[in-house]
Image (cartoon, rainbow, N blue to C red; front, side, top):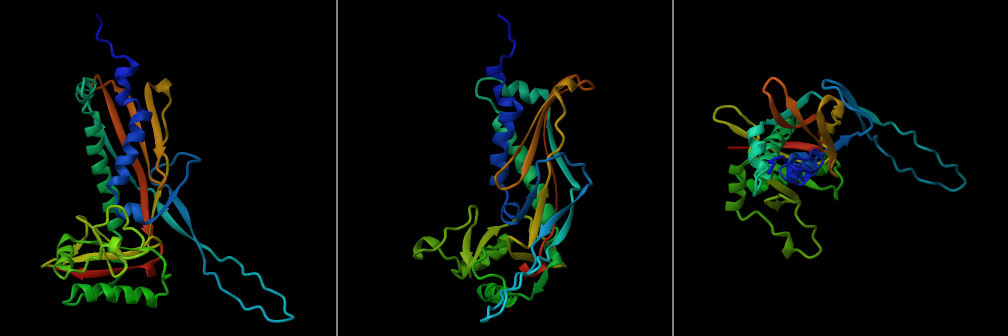
Length: 299
């Protein structure tokens, strides 16, 4: 009897199936990436290094209507934020892994999850590289009071009161807040919005994420905890080109509802004389609105 793989046995590595599986994993491992502004476009493939212009809304002004006077239309004065798609990261898996994956009890979903974890870290690291571009607020000895000072500064910057606010904070600062019983369980507050998925708690109106990639500066290191709204940063992604089957490549591109996409390819590597699979993403990030983010240092 032949050992040839059938479509059913090969299903775990059909690119469309893997891409849809992978996009779920990718979203699960993003904190900053899940809570900033997204900009994505499916009407054409990107060239790595290309700059895209992300629209940024202008200020809307309320005007008073007086009796016997005409109304005046406001001219929309929006701007654009240039974002260079300069990040292209991939994970390439060898045939030996796929051979094992095709057996009963496929290990491929585990490999896909591992691949997406490291790709998610690249997205998070790129976004975190912008944290030090925001204004710094001196940390006090009281962790709760320090967070409240950030809230006050945001209010002074006229950040909308109902805008969802987030904190990407170092594990040591999480410990400080826990020691002061700062976290509020939203389930005990009537009519309160639930925590953002993945958040470890809420303090002072901020949904807080414990971030292993929070940057540190100085010696000894001061951790740059980041408090922000969705409009502080922008993550731009664009689809990568899908090679045709005439090149011996099977490929698929899938974009999540949140606006982050991933390409999956299966191809034959003639130099290695092996079937390989590849997952990759292309993206760029930039500061969207510097008024809507603050750094709070801690040790």
